[in-house]
Amino acid sequence: MKVLKRKHAVIVTLCFMFHFSAACMNAEAEETVFAATTLDVYLRQAQTANPELKAFKARYEAAIQRIPQAASLPEPMLQVTHFVESVQTRTGPQENIFMLSQRIPWFGKLRSREDLASAEAEALWYTYQDRELLLAKTVAVHFFDYGFTGEAITLTAKNLDWLVNLEPIIEEKVRGGGDINPLLRLKVEVGRVADRLASLKQRRRAQSARLNALLALPDDTILPLPTLAPTPPLTFNDDALMDAIDQNNPELQMLSRRIESAEARQEVARLVSYPDLTLGINYIQIGDPAVNPTTPDAGNDPWGITASLKIPLWFDKNKAARAEALAGRLATVKEYEHRANALKADMRASIALLEDATRRLKLYGDELLGLAEQAVENSQASYETGRTGILEVIDSERSLLDLQLLSWRAAADAWKQRVIIQTLANQSLLDLATAENNNE
Image (cartoon, rainbow, N blue to C red):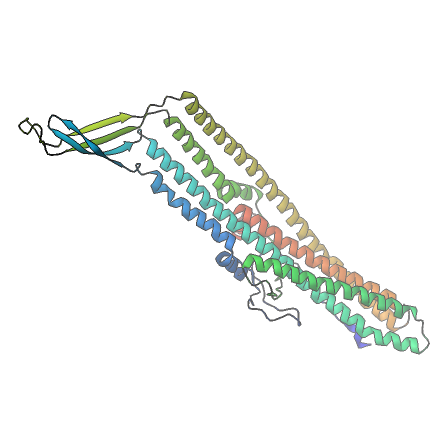
């Protein structure tokens, strides 16, 4: 019976590179305006179109514009006084007084405010980079889950086709007087596999919707299904990855700039206790000296120079400002230490999960899948010769399908953990792996 001779492709070990073969694995897939099936296109689309990422970039650009504002002197003040009733003086009636003044902050105040604005802008730049990495990680993780769903749909659909094609053969045996129980069990299995396939297709729609949101695509777009490409396993230098977190992780870089910002805020708070100087010039407009026209300097407009100091008299307020700045810096330092420990713990966890996924891939690809295929062939041969029933054939087919799905699940897990490691280290893990292999 040819229907029982179906060959199963052996799942080879998959791991650790970012090149994907483009394939549309579902013949019923809808037409889509976004036809890409490779991760690099997904990432470029997310980087250029995701509105949340654009918002973070706009916040950084806004912060850049605050630097020249912080470094500039306060705006000068022009004051005009007009006498509704002129004041008569010896040289004539005063009609208008013009005063131009400029407040000059104490030495170092402008520089410290500029340093504060600059550190805050740099922190927002690394925040933007961190969100960019987080977006890339989220897109990639959903991409690999989407790829696994595609493989699961393909394998489950093949299994369902095999069962459906087997049904007429069993029915023929029942009509010839055979036992009806195998046919009933087959119909139950067909229903079970059909239900799994329907759930997988609905899962595909849900995963496509999540990817559409990340890629800023229309919500009714059904993305084509990608596949993973087989690659050899790679090893990594754990110490190099930990060092990369300290040196390259944008979240820690952002917190480092926030520490600098807190230090600049401390300096600003310290300089609040120093007075600001205000310099000005007064000009008094004198009217026609009709009363004493012969008085010396009659009718001349006098002018003068003024200087004033802001007195930082409220010591408790200034002391509280310094204490606030100190506490803010301490909080940021402790947050940096906490996040550094948490990120390194995440790195160790991802490395362990990656090693486990690699182990499962090797187990399934090198051992169990081959044994399961051999069991299928043996059960098919035994069924053809009448030495076993159809139930054993169905069970062996079910076991093979489950192992194939577990193998693809392990492959997807390996891809996802590599993405997480890359985003934590913020550098090419392929270069790290090459360096590690050269040292061996």
